[in-house]
Image 1: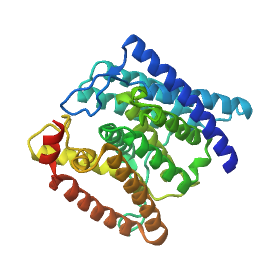
Image 2: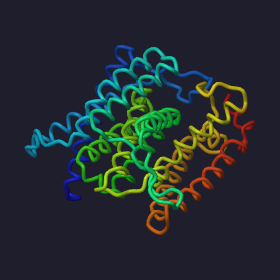
Image 3: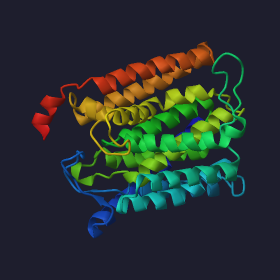
Length: 355
């Protein structure tokens, strides 16, 4: 697909997403359904805000995807991976809408995530078969551990993106940057559906960032953030395990580094402090940064770091080996953990001003 055509379909999906998100947010407000109410414990918004972003993104994607297929006479020619990814997104969104309406227990969420990941594996035969040359001794094949490891990774990334969804634009912004890095570096961007996913995210972000006014905001909800994680996880797996794209699996970790490290760091930190790793709290990286910066400043910092980290991962892959990339990622993870979990960053002064 040529760049001009890519831009055309991004515009189409942006317009579709903006239209659908506008309609859904108004319906949610009118009927007071799927609306997130503010509180003073861990939420930063001050107005009741619709949780319809995930629905809007998926509907816009399906509409623009159908339009793309019809205009290009591609009925029957959609790749199986793309078709199944879109198909499974529908029950995923529906099941996690239940979580938005009535909070599910953590184990119920994980069961749903495992089931959907397993279904994707068996319907597409796409899974992590190789970790590449991580240790310098040749390719590491997972063999019988391939399918359970893939499920573990998909569930982990879904939870990572769900957990980082704490301020406007953060989850969808990180997901969009991850998909752009995966897409442009591997060449997967020339798959029309990835282009349409990104366009649908942009349409949502216009409302999520309240560009049309503070009263016109929309949130992803748990349904939307899980959808973002699901798409990022599977695009990363597909690009790293398909010989057409030829990207090292370790490079994909650089593309999702911030959500991944935030999730892993919090799990260890909470367990160390005697807390449940599933408990909610203001201990994410964006919370730490907001003790010093504004929400918009925090968002900008994290997105810049996400992009820079991904580009650094590309430089490493192009100029060194898998073991070098792994070592540098572990060093990066250690530095991140020290910064995020041992530095209070003016917490007391922030709490005095805002609580």
